[in-house]
Image (cartoon, rainbow, N blue to C red; front, side, top):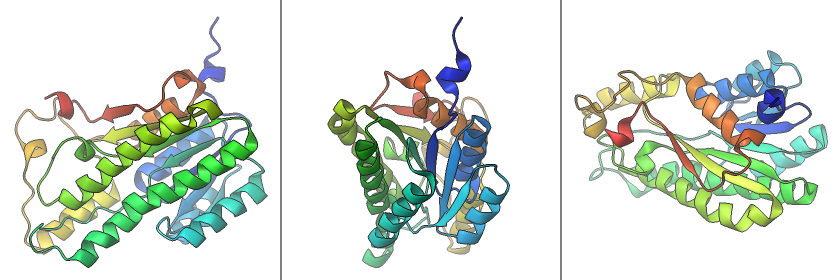
Length: 261
């Protein structure tokens, strides 16, 4: 019989989750702990990370701004000191303020790219270094977006560009780390019902911006609803698990059918 616990379980494995303090990241932390993992809950909001970690057996919290190189390096050093190994990274941390392209400043563009693009580079680099040093291989799952593959909504060009970069980093490094037994994949959510998405919509309204574009059109969400954070987390668990042992460089849409509509 197939050992499902062996395929999809994470007993004795250490998983680092960025953006773990709320939304998709929190759901990822909860699901991986349920699967047996010890989880390093990382978030720019240290109190939020601590709140999640304190409710999960074997978890520990770390305040981490993924855009700050010295902080990212220090965080990984702390995780390795506390846990002694790293088996998987699930990179969720991102920002997504909606901006009108023509009125967007270079500083606003740079602020988003610092988190979403440079942050992805930094956390991937340190994860790969730790996994190579451990000699056991590992798995990285980047939470990208359907916006990285196709324009989805209006006033979202800066975010879409950053997530296109995340997808390309995923594919590029999947090639370069395969010989070390490190698999790197991406999950592409569409709309997800999170606190952050609600805040972004409220910010758009406050700025006088209108939500439009392909994703808002009739029939463009075949399953007819937004995703729940746990539905994104389950895709992350699959791609990080031994059940996905022959998958690397993939981008898995979890979008209710948007990309095929």
